[in-house]
Image (cartoon, rainbow over all chains, first blue to last red; front, side, top):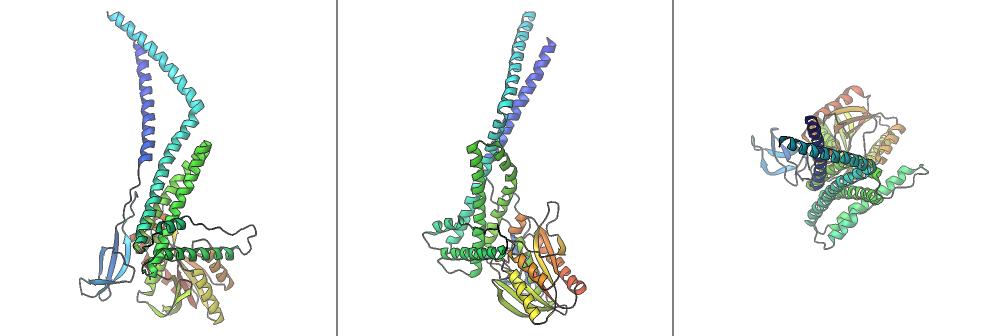
Amino acid sequence: MNTTLQIDGLDMFIVFTLAFLVILLLLMTMSRQEAKPRIVKPDIKTALICTSCGTKTIREFREGDYISKEADNEKCPRCGGPLVVDAIYTEQLPTKP
Amino acid sequence: MRVMLDNLILQLDEGFGMFLNAFYILLFAILIFYGQRIQFHLSMMEMGGILKQLFFMASHARKTSLDEIKKYSDDPNIEEKMDRLLNSFVIFPESMDPAGIVKKVEHIMNIREARFLEDVRRMITKEIDESRLWNYSNMLEATLVLNLIYKVIEHYYLLAKKTKNFFLMAQLQMIVPLIFNEAKSYLLAIEAFRLGTPIGDTIGPYVVHKLLNDGKTEVIEKKTDYAKDTDLYIAERNNRRIYVIKARGPGGNVGKPGEAIKKVLSRAKKGNEKIAGIIMIDAALKLEGEKTGTVAEGVGAAIGGIGVEKFKIEEAATKYSVPLYAIIIKQSIAEAISTMKKEIVDSTSEVIRRIDRILNNEMEEGSVVIAGIGNTIGVP
């Protein structure tokens, strides 16, 4: 009697494991079906350089910025000289758009 | 009482054991006869989900582009015009007789580029600067690609579903993760083109722009539109005459560097001027294990695209026996078409150092052509 009970216990374990795996597979497939891609805006920086003293400053990108563009209404924080756009870049790409 | 209970449990166990045995046999039979069909349905569910995501991406791209263009347009038929543009196509020339195919491809692509830009221009009703128009043209091209990816994947999905073809669905399932990554890259590209920021592919024009403005180069003359949408700078660097070629910016444009290089070599030959070499700087796709922004050197024409410009450069260099040097900056496809990463910007000084080393130590006497290849968006 004890032996029969032990075998049934194993059978139950196998049935539950199989059922669990099937449910897991279905849930994984369904979750992939439902997932909508997230649209992540990249964090873009503009590096400015002073044409008089060469000091570099970094600020958020503003629409209309392009390389070598003279920055309007912005002066070098060190010498007050004119600033031009030196580089426009993003530190890292959004990994899950 | 205890004995009766034990007997009852034993009977129940035996009954349950028989049920389990029958269940296993049934499961085995189901898996043998219907295993592939079950797998087909699971694959179909997964592909359906990915297709939904691709549809979302294509719709988002279309909406972003439409909203952006509406800022410069009062046209009531703008959506119709945009959809016509997004469904446009190119028929490539017949290649059964490949002689002269490059000229035919060039002709078709020139028509396509001009028509695409004119179609974008026709959508705009308010005043707009040329650079922004170019950027919008690039943005719509990326939207068109996303739309095309969605339509092609949907086609194969529906075909596999209609014919219940498991192998077609399995092939789709294998290739889709790669295509999905490419689609994500195009979604990022749309944002970069909308804002007009330099992208990874801009590194070629960015390097030559820096080279011309680092204080060690004396620009003698600038010839705007030396070739179509391509500028030529005649300059002196390290006591050597250099001809610097790049697409006209800051709008998103790749220009015709092949045509410009061909023209420079031809004119130098006529004027008995020796061209010691051509240095081409371009972005190149990295292997998965390589670091973004790694600089590498080699020989040959470093230029991508459909092949027309590459053909022209190779033909001209061979005709006039001019060595071709290539410097590439490695990056992934996503990095190449989205806003430039800092690692790529930081590689600029290394590229300029290598250009100087080649100019000073590795080239014979004579002038040198330096071409910054790629989309010049955000770089004048």
